[in-house]
Image 1: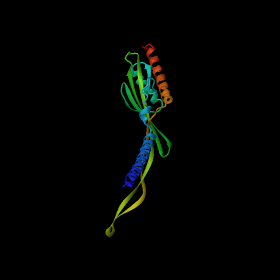
Image 2: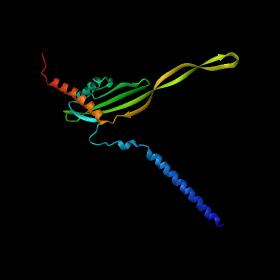
Image 3: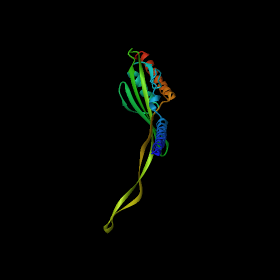
Image 4: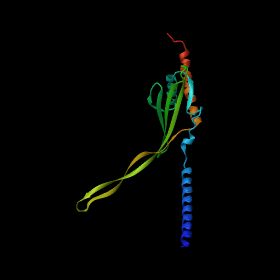
Length: 192
């Protein structure tokens, strides 16, 4: 009878060690993953926005022209928002696409507006799938025969919001140049 409590403690000790090791390995697995919400700063200065002089319509028009000037296709546009995209092919079996979403909002003073921009980069890869055809053969039933044809399709393999402040600085600089051209044209007297 005296061995039973000793064996229980030994088993309890081993079980405790096993649980502790399992807990540590689970903790290591969960901390190894990146928690993306920690990257969200929500600070006053953001790479994704910039204020410009002018109405929200004029500021969004400058953004539209900046994208058009770089070969982007404008998919949707309103007075205060627009979406555009551009495709790239770095290799024969790879395809990249950058998509812009722009929203312009008045700052309430009637003299300036803020342009909010978010761009995503999507990656696509060529996926090949071989096709086969069935052939009915009297007594044997149907036989599946592989033929050399294949159906190729592009499959999205990555998608990420672009976070580079340099990328957005270049875009805002291009929009500002178009906005300056518009305001200079407004200052000129109308010709009769």
